[in-house]
Length: 95
Image (tube, rainbow, N blue to C red; front, side):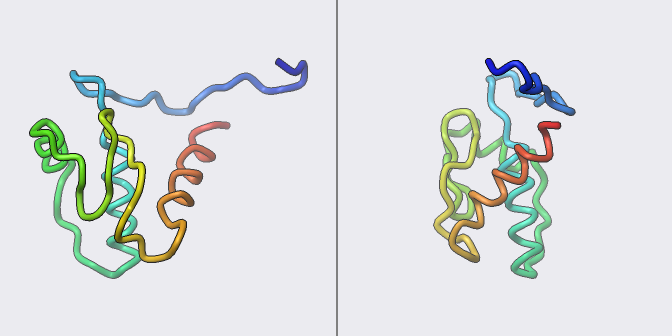
């Protein structure tokens, strides 16, 4: 490790569910995407947790892996929309 490099730390600890998954990023992304597209979004995170627990891995075009992390979006409003969101999440959580 370089001597002048800051140690990695987060401002908020991720809350994993009992099964080791976390759908907060998916939920926040879909909320932001709906706002960007000017679409009503009235679902809560429990809707996604219930689907995830039932082995659903695609929510409104967003494919998630087995820990609930979004890996691609077939319905992004612009190319790179999901990647930009994920980058923003990690930049704002690491300070």
